Amino acid sequence: MSYQYVKFFSMGLVRNGEFHMYLPPKKAGFFMKDNPNYQRPAKTLILLHGFNGDCDDWQQHTPVAEWSMQYNLAIVMPTGGVSFFLDREATGHKYATFIGVDLVNYLRETYGLAMNKEDTFIGGNSMGGFGAMHAALMFPETFGAAMGLSSAAIAKQLPEMKKNLQPNRMANLEYYIEQFGDLDKAPESDINAEWQYKQNVEKGIQNPRIFMACGTEDFGIENNRNLAQFFKDQGADIEYYEAPGIHNWSFWIPAAEKGIQFLLEK
Image (cartoon, rainbow, N blue to C red):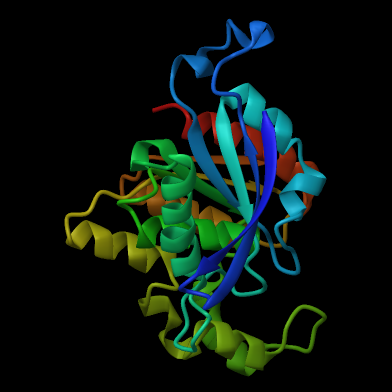
């Protein structure tokens, strides 16, 4: 196994992007010789962080090194600021493009990873869960599956924020407008995963497989349940997991491993 910290130039950001990465060994050692995951080439999982986080989050809070070794996964953890991993009009603010185009192309050209959608997955927690599903539905030719843990599935609530948003420690109204644009239009745009999914269906594009999870005491539980039910009603290839838990790593760590197992099923 090897670990790398990388900076590379991103056209979407018009500056360097950064990521941590764990690479599994090319050949299974004696202690992995009976592991079926080494009967195939390594697959790639991009993990996106939550609000206020950066590329250190998954590395510091979870056993990503163990997951990389156990599941023969290249695990890539980029920084996305507080962007919700969306493309905006302003120069240097194309975070979805940074993830779904620039980063993937860099992994392909430099490491020979993520060469096809069947071997390329994306996941995240909270804001990163939103970003992971957004990127997978925006680039369905690139990502075979997505994993959203306690996803910030807030697209349908955005129009009401102009009326009801109370001052809080997370963000003000100006932030939401800067990230999402016209809040009234958000539900009928690619900010909404439901809208993205239906647009792909109408175009005859195969949508990625989806794993979602949320703790039953999480403040976002109803939004996650509703989004998961939408996917089920649409006939999506989805697994939804709930267990006692709140919006923290104690829930996300075991949920992520269940998600990884789902990603690798096909």
